[in-house]
Image (cartoon, rainbow, N blue to C red):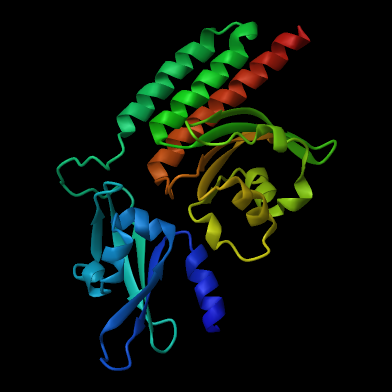
Length: 281
């Protein structure tokens, strides 16, 4: 693996990692090179603090507790090439340490409570009021998870395109719905494949996608730093997806958050299926 390949690999890794380089003058002393967005979110460290960090700070006990996510991470460290040192943080499922709440901790209870409220509204909504309810739901979800854009896309496999049907934007964030109509599926093959297989598309660090990547060329002009999209699947039929963009800062969605937001995606599918059934009567 060349150094270029190594840098591309670690920046795109689906877990937190930071790269250090050994100093020639002082062996066993390391100079911080860079870290991907997940590592920065998990550690909560500023750029200045990371620049002064050493690998040993993260692997003294082989477990790292993140106040930013309130989760625990296993630390792995190794040298991928001579003179380089890689620190990797991987989440440990279902392991929590006692820690006082911090302002940066996200409140999963608030997200679950919101979904319960939305579920009640969706179950009783009249067809004419459904578009307004969906728009309100996107706004509430965006504010709860601190996203900058929340949106719904519909897949059109007859024309091999997808189009943005609903969009909510935080204050100061430019809407993109008008420019995202009839997007050719050919430019997002990896995105489409993930959704067709029932998987979400979670990209915590959009700028680190490879140069020339078609998906990067679509996302970067919109100012997107991180995103999460969840497929809307009715059985084996792929209807579209619901997405969450982060423009102002990087965002890493924990496994718990992704599971809860997946419930909202299923709500939208149920609403669509119910609307179809009513139309057939």
